[in-house]
Image 1: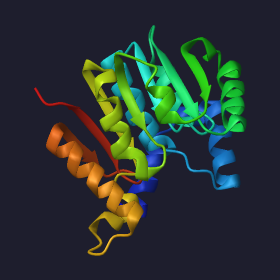
Image 2 (image 1 turned 180 degrees about the vertical axis):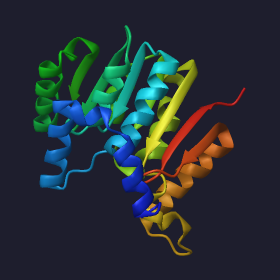
Image 3 (image 1 turned 90 degrees about the vertical axis):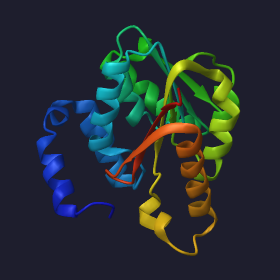
Image 4 (image 1 turned 30 degrees about the vertical axis):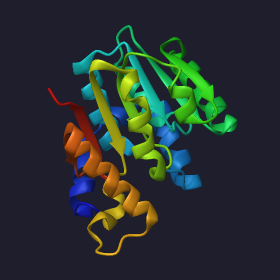
Length: 206
């Protein structure tokens, strides 16, 4: 655990509003039942606040699963849209169903395939969210830098990688995360918030 489990439970108890959202509840139940990785409500609330403050026109999400994190983005959007990309069609179809039931389908685009290649089709990205294969994080940001808007935000999940980033002899996935983190702190103004598995927030250096 990145933070004390009792602290995490305390924070989750404070996050009561989403417990009244049947879509979020259902998504979380599926994640628990199928052991499917989602960012969880603590990170979801973080994404919601960032989106409200940023008021983006375009959010592009690499690695959407069945739409949990994108759902938080969409709930906070004004007139913008979020692009969901996942390599499994069944995940995207499930995401479409959730968004339609919530009345958020007009705030989203749904894409199936290689997330990085599809993301390259979009320009002036205001928020880029990375949650694809961890070994591709560095490749993703380096490939998409020219696609970002002038004041873009980059958000990446799992950047503390179960705490393995402090291991003296990291495995390949952990090493890839560490290299990504170092790149983001060197080339962007970055911070890591140690909730859940670590969430990185970066802006371009001025």
